[in-house]
Image (tube, rainbow, N blue to C red; front, side):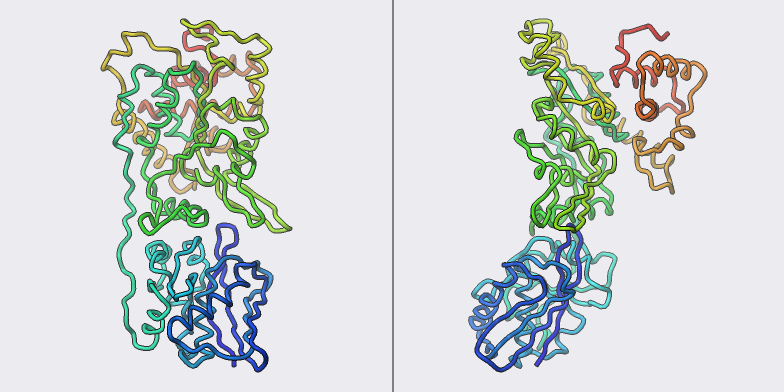
Length: 511
């Protein structure tokens, strides 16, 4: 006798449909799983049998064979318990095959027959075919599963224990989940940029970086406010669109970052790279790869404190994701692609001891020490960081002053620039100025005669690469947007060059 049902499995952060075939035949009692299942899948037999018996149901005698197809897809995880158990109960006569048609089952079973929440429900739901009309999931995953059905005609049933699923299929008990999960983002109101005294130019640079998606590096002695500024960045991040919420939630579903209380990511991620990071930490990895920090920061910010304390090879890992907005991993001949569209924000001391250029404390580093310390940031990596600012020690007057930019003012700057970019890039698929290609830069970052002359001198004097030249223009475009200017004026060009450290803000050589 044969019973068939459907479930899904994970392939990176994508879901794939799996058909579960369960057959019983004469012979000594045995439970065999075929179809490229891992150890967790092969152990399903003991959990399924015990859960069915403890639920008060009969378990078929003889040899049971479970086939999971397509066989070429590797199956991993314990969520195959539920669909296997439902098919086994068809073999026992508890259910009929009609009860399983056009339905899918995802979930792990405890020995007493309860459904245990599992990781990856969201992408697995997205991988189910259109003919599936009902999906049974653990009650702890029901809100997450519901997010995947907003644009599809699928009903979700949250199940506490195996008997609940049987009762619903046989007698129609229970109800489908219908709560509208909130998707409105909120800001970290407990922190305000007003609390960071002084550093007006640094705050403008942060607003510019957020508005246009430009990488930012803050350099200054210890205690000048670098980390304080960075930790307040979430307060001025724009709200996520429904599409961005879904993209980000897919990543966190696979990595176990979602829960019944947080079934969807509604706030842009703000991730901090650990001090002792590895390639797997940054990019993701493992035999069956899971996303790393650059993907967990997708649609948000990746902050690296003590930026130049990170080994050079770790910093170099960021280059391709920053350029390509994704991570590609190859494992055992399989290709895994994880999104990684993030804003890089770094904070670093100017030298090993931290006091190079400080007005109060003398630096103890030799020139060789300084060169060795700064060499961790390569030229190609520097090219990808559009804004580099210095945060000097503020004076006593600034420390006591109440005249400082607040989160509300900075959020207004960011919002103004984003609205301008939405209109500029409508229908192009581009979201931010930093994403423009060279053709778009020529069209949307046109300069006047005086501005063109400034850029010509900078290009020659500092041997700018073509890539850096275009990045300076994109940055100047964002600066003009945050200031509410229609055209890129001289002030925007000077600020862009100053941010890229090719021109000191007090330097008058180009005028």
